[in-house]
Amino acid sequence: MAGIALSGAGGQIGGVLRPRLLAAGHVLRSGAGFAVLAPLSEAETVVPGDLRDPDTVDRLLAGTEVLVHMAGTSVERPLPEVAENNLAALHAVYEGARRHGLRRVVFASSNHAFGMYPVTERLGEDAPFRPDGFYGLSKAWGEAMGRMYWDKHGIEGVALRIGSALPRPTEPRHLATWIGHDDLADLVLCAATAPLRGYRAVWGVSDNSRCYWDTSSAAAIGYRPRQSADAFADAILAGADPRDPVARRFQGGSFAAIDYTPEEERPGGAPPERA
Image 1 (spheres, rainbow, N blue to C red):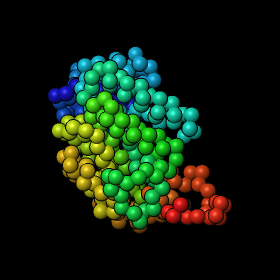
Image 2: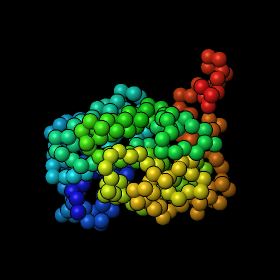
Image 3: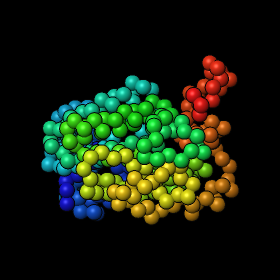
Image 4: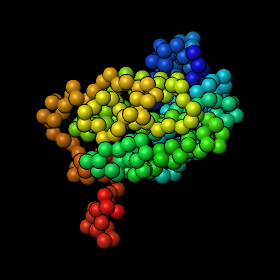
């Protein structure tokens, strides 16, 4: 099996992926950042350090063929923090991928790169970006970086537009956006191992009947979700909806509502769908 580097191994998604990647037979180099992690098996090497540091990147990528990049800021934060963790660090790992001759980078993009689309729209792989904040904006930039490193340097890229990666859905929005942990691991394994020459962006979501996105691009790399938010729908819809009116209107949910300017306060009052 190919040697895989996993950045962000100390995070929520990293904790989901580590045992599953090892169980699939991969030799794993896990980037811990500043977390304290113990290897889960003899097949895992834990690499601590700051990914903005080329020496850390070199230690993480040594002897690997594929980087699964899950590190970075994963919530809406002030732009300077997002820029350091999601722009500067991403550039550093792509340059490391060049130095080490990696075949592929699997990039954790996000549905929040498209969060200002209304919930009434269904999006394909080629939908234009409409980020719902600085975090989503950084993911649009990251997808463009993956495209550039394929076009200019021949590093294969798969951008995973991850939905709501949680043990189970807990609110009405998740009935459209949820991806269960088993499905997430399957998606990452497909992205890391599928025969692919080039760059591709795919939606990362379970088999939800209310899904906002066309998932055929994920099916094309072999992803077949086995989980569904539909199983939780009756219980969720019977409870209170915690979202405010803005969060209910846009696919990004509560991220779209952060620092949102009401229409009556905007120049001309143009609704965002027609802006």
